Length: 384
Image (cartoon, rainbow, N blue to C red):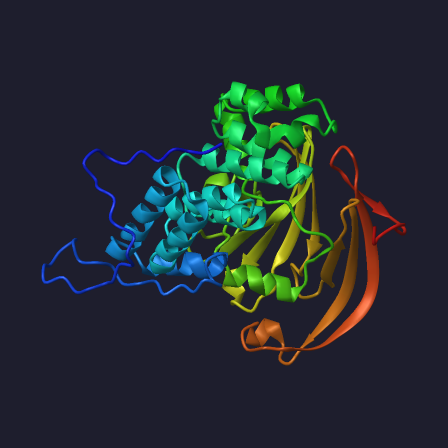
């Protein structure tokens, strides 16, 4: 399961005394970078980490020394507890994908599976290479935690991103749970995933849908949720416009200033159907304009099956929609009239508060097995 970090010949590992960021009289790239100043409580907070990575670039000698000390402690001295603390110190100085990856390894070895998963996920976010390896390790962590859906998701992702050690997939003790859980044919799961790793068109589809992480239920897509998306970094790249029709169809669309697109999550995943949720922000109308939420189903090749607007308000005359989704595939959409302090058509949405939200009605849908969205008169078991 572990990726062995190969250090270049001739690089000596420093002693384990705590480094300091002393000023170097030399100029140039040898100068230590400015400390990111992360706290121990912040190292797993994705938005904070990504923001700091953008502003703290370049070489940081203190971070690098802690990292190398951690590698020495983990690989040579075989002390994962101490190694984990050193990797954390490296990250607090300067968050780096390699430090998060090795932190995940050390935490997994001491059976701290929740934090190991968070560390690996941040390694993935920070573009750790090879991607397939960090995804495989996530599959191992979730299998050990007996989280079948997450283990399956990351194992398939790892294979489709190039993990090809089939012998290890069948022998790795960390994957015992998912191999023996009996929910489906494990051989078929692996074979199907391997088939998607060689077709360029299928690969682009796999890259796209794997960016949507499984959602947590119940999921309420209200304005507060939309604001969190707008404040975060989780944009959908324009290279995936093949799968996001709004990137192509909007007459006023401009890649620079027109619309922004956000991942929400993966609502349904089978070998034949992937149901995704994404959000669209009309930047032209101002930052305060609420997001529109779409739920979209594709087949196993990335071909559109069905699409439904479940949240937001495309036109001011439309009801404002607030959906609640549950794990059994039910969708309850509340319809409201939003009353703003000022007329949005004249004053826009920025600095224009909603003073009243009047309930109108509800609509009910369910996600069918074939991926279509079926309107219902009423839903049973909405909370199950």
